[in-house]
Length: 415
Picture 1 (cartoon, one colour):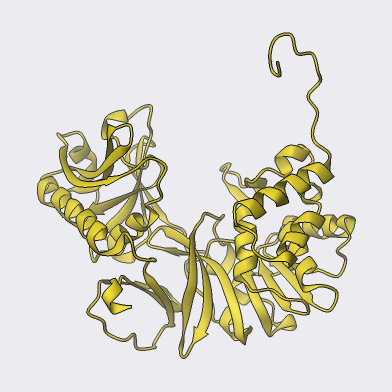
Picture 2 (cartoon, rainbow, N blue to C red):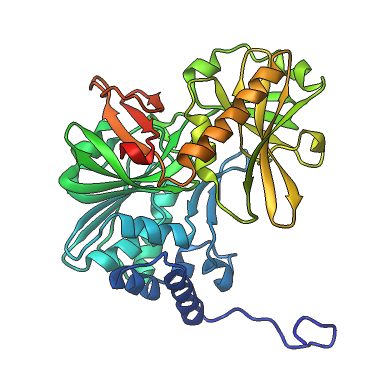
């Protein structure tokens, strides 16, 4: 009767060895680990030694993020990433014994995992802009038995030239651009694994050289703390109804819109439209979010306080795709039809809510017809100044200072 009033057995943590083995078994069973080398690294590296002292052993080895530092506003500025994502990123980097690897965004644990895979003949350099994080990583790596991992305080945007060229560069902070240093320091056949933010939507991309640009071979939905320093490019946050309703904007064109009219618009009646596109429970549809972001239309991500503004009912209360005009907004919604079926729709507010809401529904229908069952968009990153080939397929260009990311939605007939 575990957990009952009669149970007086003291609850204690697992031993580090038990917890570590359990985590590795889970990652292997879930298909996150696919190589013996990465499996061995998770079975060897003591993750709990890299977590803050107040974190229990079981929490340290849970398949979840461990926050290691917060800023003055309470937001995380450094963390140990969730093990499932670390495993997939290491597999994506194609690490091998003797390899040279740069990690951007330190903490120590991920660098130790990399060191296990590349072995004593390989080299690992880990950089971070925060001197506290660097010092803590160095201490933990020494205690855990990885003195050969180099930990350096440096700006992410500059990389670390001293150890180049690298067979893999693994970025563990959210980036909105690809600094030239990263591609300059990457070996010709190397892989850059980076969480890249594209119009507010972050995907961990595995990028490889492809002529004059980089092409993504993998794209994983993810979340990371944002990059600091020279490469910082924060998302703009607009309060539409205090902290109860906010809009995050990651688009220079959208930032210039006068969105003041959206506040009174939200006090007016809403317009609902439904698509007849359905989804079973617990089914991923993250490509729909990226598809809506890929439209040539002002766009943002809506966050709504569920308790204080429940009537708005967005599909995602924290980060919901929304199309915008200067005085109207329409965002993704979903409703339950029965125990096994949910239907996508849209809700709009403002004087142009009806056509804008219908436009969102039309886009949902197009996604369902043309892209829902495809592998996902083709994502390529071009240096600024390089001509991007024209296409007759739906395409979004995300211009940044150093690069432009092209997200192209091809159908099966065009692949």
